[in-house]
Image 1 (cartoon, each protein chain N blue to C red):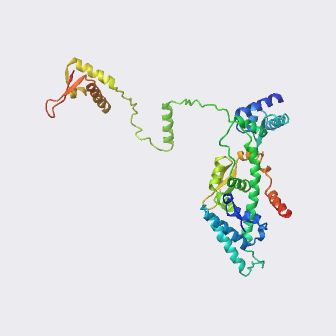
Image 2 (cartoon, helix red, strand yellow):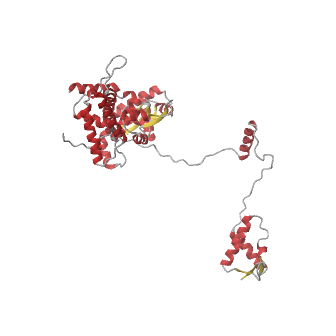
Image 3 (cartoon, each protein chain N blue to C red):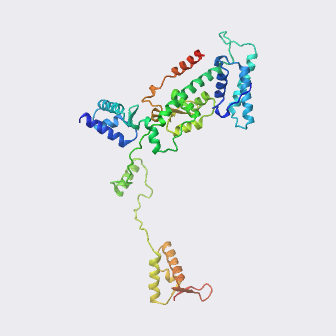
Length: 181
Length: 237
């Protein structure tokens, strides 16, 4: 199987599957080792980008998924009119920010940081599949712990949770603003 | 000072406090508690005026602010190492942390813009045929069950008895009507009990009764009773 065939197969699989496909699944289907599949898919991703194609391949951890180029949003929107794609409320954004940087984290910790009840925000994020329940804290009452999902990586346009700017970067950002004043 | 506050904007007491801190251009770690407390309470009053739901968190913060304000009036306390304790310290720390997360949530918001503009395709829909083949026969399953029970020294209830296959008895009203018609064609009148002769199950009796009612309704037969408690006679029309 040459590179061209491999690219073609990967492209077809990603299109048909729709959902994020892991590197393991791809290498299983191609009967090739994952290192070479990873290299091929990276080339395919670059080709899409370089040629300015309307379809892109997005990487989240070791999973790949096809998506549209965000720049074409307006044009897609003309034909595909959605009702339910609402942006997150300020409350949900704050809750998501805390979970992203403090995960795994309990509801009580979130509420202590925000100073307000947050169960409805947590529910919204769970419904949107941006966070999930990740076990329970070994403390009285065994409170539920929350953590971010693969969907969250998609949301924040990163391939890995480590790509998020560090907490200290935000701290420094605030310090600089204070110094400017 | 006269100013208008957009009431709904605040996510909670921290959000409101942060707003006041920014507005007054003060350092989080050196909040003029007296002034901020009065501004905070002014806001609470406005909320009441506009009949907005005042959550307990806002009230709790008001009481904390007043507590800190009163502590500020007392002689300065010192900790074990002789350092002066600032009564505002803990609140300032929490406010600072909240400020950072508010900053992060603004960053998330930026990311969201891109996310909202990207489309993903649903997986191919391949309907499940619903048929599952189980290549095991019933006798084989029964034998397996017995083995499991034997291995666990359990006994299947009534195991020693013969296992009967119960046939579902199907008696249709239409068939029974035909039977009754045959019966009545042989003799113009029959006794009520005659109609039920040979009925072996409750179901058969019920069906026969329903068949008789149907025949009466269709004016095929009529019922007669010569005297009280006498047997009903069914006669052909």
